[in-house]
Image (cartoon, rainbow over the protein chains, first blue to last red):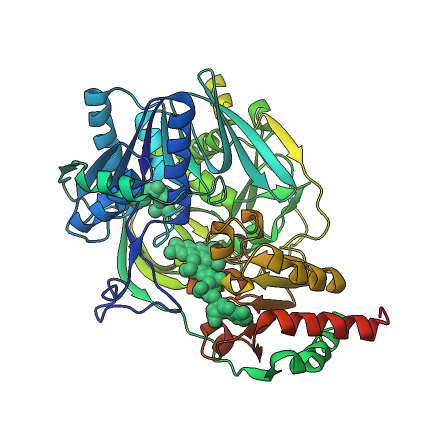
Amino acid sequence: MRVLVCVKRVPAPGARIVLTDDQQAVDARHLPFTVSPHEECAVEEAVRIKEKHGGSVVVLTLGPAEAEEQLRYAVSVGADEAVLLETDGSDWDPQATAAAIAQRTAELEEIGGGFDLILFGNESADSAGYQVGIRVAHALGRPVVSGIKGLDIEDGIVVARRETGAGFEVYRLPLPAVIAVKEGINLPRYPTLPSRLKAKKVEVATTQPEPVTGGLQMLRLVTPPEVASVTTILGQGPEAAPAVVDLLEKLGLV
Amino acid sequence: MVFLEHESGVPLETSQQALTLAGMLDEVCAVTVGGCQVGGVARHLEIDHPLLSDYAPEAIGEALTQLIRSESPTAMLAAGTERGNEILSHVAALLDLPLAANVTEVRPEGESWELTRMRWGGSLLEEAALSAPVKLATVAPHSFAAAPMADSIEAEPFTPELSESLRRTRVVDRVTISEGITLTTAPVVVSGGRGVGSPDGFQILEELAGLLGGAVGCSRVVTNNGWRPHSDQVGQTGTRVAPNLYIACGISGAIQHWVGMMASKNVLAINNDPEAPMVTKADYAVIGDLHPVLEAVVAEVKRRKGLS
Ligand SMILES: Cc1cc2nc3c(=O)[nH]c(=O)nc-3n(C[C@H](O)[C@H](O)[C@H](O)COP(=O)(O)OP(=O)(O)OC[C@H]3O[C@@H](n4cnc5c(N)ncnc54)[C@H](O)[C@@H]3O)c2cc1C
Ligand SMILES: Nc1ncnc2c1ncn2[C@@H]1O[C@H](COP(=O)(O)O)[C@@H](O)[C@H]1O
């Protein structure tokens, strides 16, 4: 199994999101960077598939040069190769992102052989368009399902499970296929010291795609109005219990 | 055009909310797969095809694409649900058109739209320009009131041409797990974060939830530590809840957690840090170590219920 995983570098804000003065981005000067939990799980799933069925895992991102950090992290938890589509850090819309990823994927397949499976996160952490994976699948002419929380590989088939309110539904896709996964499909491992050293040395295959404008253009970001709230302190420690239960009674819960 | 999801012939509330937005923009044609009661619209097209007897996102996307080609609507909307986002993404890919997911507002500006859409699960908004011959957008749940349903009108059938190969992405099996009270339906959610300290630390949360007829939730730190299954996780990449009361025990209130429970009617934080964002944003708070607090609360509930 040759598996490709696509991840996106995003800042990880804490209790609130602060914007840059021009409202074009999240002010990330004091923030760590990460990828969506869905994508972390996609990487872990790819590595588990490799461990079970053999093969290799390629991780790809479209983003600024700094996105190497996220690629190296993926290598430190088991990916074999890292591919960067380097941009100037500006916001690429989903159509443009998907077109660049699909084109680069086709090139990678020509060089290194076809991917049996391409994994995406269900939605990116920041822009959450829910669509890049589906667009790439169509561009490559492959079947795709999203929202997947369970995967098994059988002869030439991927069995995928998706949660519904009442249980789950099952899909059987012929390989090669594209799957967008959700957090909870597995519990990702942490890197080890030797694996981190190995990741430091891995060569990142970098290309610079032509920037194109898609049909959805971000104008500005705005933080939603915060609902001003006054917190009623019910007490300190266990002595607060009667006040808590008074509240439960008032809300009709006891 | 609005693609409606329905259950046993009744449109989902989120789909009705999408109808509301559509009605503000233009004359509305509702589209459903299979029979559904729809009123208050100019037309209702009912897609009928044997391949669509169970959920098949790729095939539905193809059917809608054929409809768009034959009817040339100005826009196609759907609810910003898992299925709505998935199906319109297929349409967008097939027609190579832009798609704006989870819009909360649309302001037509001549041929294009200026719109507001959700990022970061709703903790950030984006204002964007959408220019396309057919505008594709999903409508963020609960951004618009559901239109009251008028008497339903007669549906016109539409039979798409679907290749057998589209069976490859159709649901082949369903497994039902019957749970009692679930996170999304519970009137009270007792939720724990890192402050709970261990898997065993959740026993007291379980006990309180049991006494109140509620469910147990948790933060991502908890699921990442393997203390609870991911199905208990509340937040941007977990479940969204809106109970009467959300009790956040040892949860700091990171924005990705907050978006998952901000629709709760009341929030009670139990935290030993009075400066924690969860405490400052909550309606009620108890400052202190959560375990003795919860033990005292459980004892008091039992006492008042006459259980001890
Ligand atoms: C893209 C993305 C998506 C994410 N999605 C989610 C999501 O869906 N859900 C989610 O929860 N998180 C999510 N996160 C993670 C989120 O940013 C936080 O890391 C996480 O919510 C923190 O969990 P916590 O509050 O349990 O832990 P901490 O932030 O460590 O907070 C622990 C709190 O417990 C208090 N405490 C400690 N001991 C005690 C005690 N004995 N008694 C009382 N109080 C105590 C502390 O004062 C502190 O306030 C996401 C992050 C990213 C980047
Ligand atoms: N810039 C990017 N680089 C690599 N993968 C991406 C990028 N943007 C989105 N993706 C992938 O596509 C998924 C869906 O993204 P979106 O359509 O933005 O919600 C993400 O979870 C990623 O797996």
